[in-house]
Length: 283
Image (tube, rainbow, N blue to C red; front, side, top):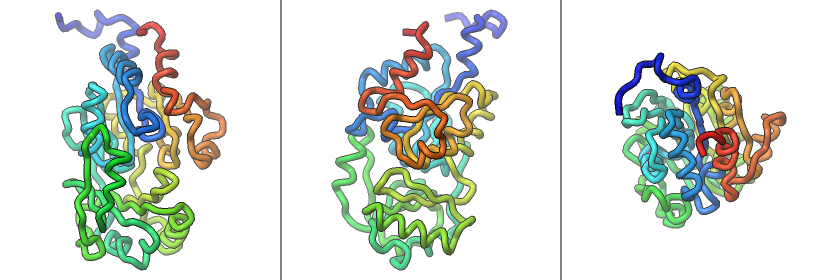
């Protein structure tokens, strides 16, 4: 195909080049089994083939999301670990922020993590304090991602992008309250799911990372369309010029953005259905 100059592109093609679609994964783009369904994959592939920029924004690890991106079959920027890492479509790291090592060590002590399963993300992978095979079976069917068992309470604290506490919501709410009472302003803390509390550096969020991606692509918020379902999507939906809340979204997200339109749930292909409605000319 002959490479065309910018002035040869149609108005619609130029519009697509500056359009960004950013979506969360679990509870949003992925189905109820945490997998990419064919209808959604075809939708995203069609949009990408027409020059629309795709970004995945998730609490998941970069190495995990690479596998999901492969299943989607598109080139996409990846915002991972809730914004602690940002990678370009060619996997070049363009942003990274870790928890301060001394604070990370403190947050991984039993005095803080009691009542939960302690996890951490480092660049090399996913660390868990004990064998928990049921986690892999639920969330990582498409990517094949898995954990390494590690004595986290004796970890150096170096290079930690995110600390995760998994457990009953009541116990996690108490952990959240304890962390905020002692370290408010030193961390960004959020629930990515009802049973998963996550802690990152204070400058980290999906919203902050999205702004970095938009700047890199010389795009702007007005041309950004975002989808989310969780508390960790609050900042991201606030950045986008057009944003949608999933029907299955958390009450905290709905309360934070009460005026945003609510679309179909993830198990009803809500994101793909909404995008096909918005870009009818491509389908």
